[in-house]
Length: 64
Image (cartoon, helix red, strand yellow):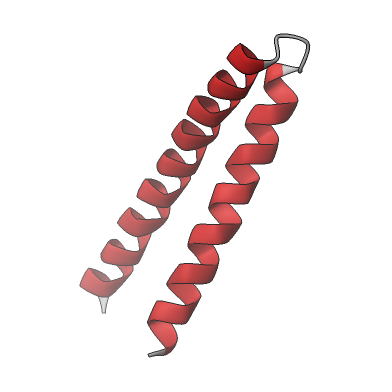
């Protein structure tokens, strides 16, 4: 049971890191297109969007 918990913990850490990094990359790209947009808000928005999308995919994958 401890091994399964470690795998899930690693997946959560990877999920958060990928969401934060992907959100930053998308915010940087959007900021280059329109310099007026606030970087931190876009970063938060895109990170949350990616995190919820990946969580949905993981929930669907774990059900089947």
